Length: 390
Image (cartoon, one colour):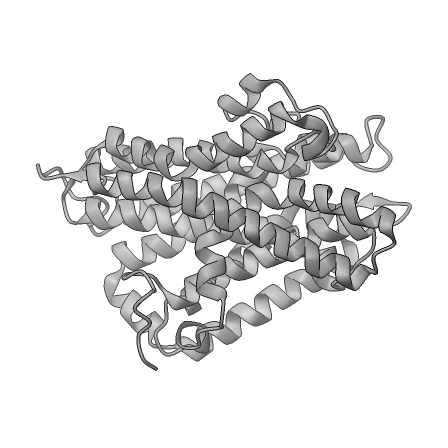
């Protein structure tokens, strides 16, 4: 397979495929929820919200991998450089779309957005009311909160000589805290409780930081294996097809469980899939990330046409696709346009809007960032992170 010169160096084919899959799932879900009103893409529409979970796992790996690579090599992390680089990666496009929502609320969706300070402070997901304008920015809020906290935790581990065992115990504790949070909140807002409504479930569980942040951790775990257990990692990624098989089986089982008991008509959101399902889904996606990084797996070797482009466009696509879908639907549905044609036109419109944002906003900001802030690390040495035996 020959190299494609248009593909950025250092990118992983398998990770691009997973990112393209994630945004495709989200689009399928939102198309059913806000356009067609039915499961247009079958199970993809029903469970497409899990694409956000996959994004969380990918972010957990990618950010932790960057940071751990430098810390284990005894390089000094610059928090200023890290935060500025993250800001230049995520904020320019976000600000443009946010400005459009506040400048043209009726065109962009017709609903009232939360207060502007909630978006600027990335606290919009806290007690978020479903159906408000730009509600899908909730996941970006949790991502930004993760970007804020993770380097501080890793720096603390580096400074105080955290052992590998301690690192894994902290990770396990954080995952358990997510499960416990969902358990307690499910009991408070589930079917049969005085506070039960779908609104309370979404505001207190689905959008909540404590209930969803643990989905980054399987990605962080993959980075920990890679950098703190390098010998084991090399053996692990040699089993590419086995890793892929394990990941596919795991996510299939989780999705089957979600299909069966995540939401039950006349009953509400199920206990087991609420408390454990989010974590199990993220762990299954973590197995797919390992497969994507295994050179011999099909996921790493096979380049799906368009996956690379969709992967690098995925952030802009995520931010803009819902308002574009609303606009196209408002224009075409009164004309009696068939559903298949509506889908084609709407998809093309989303891709066009994405291309404009990516090429005119996202790429220039990243080029400026890479030119003026090429990395997260300085040269002075600090103690290595988690290399001692326990």
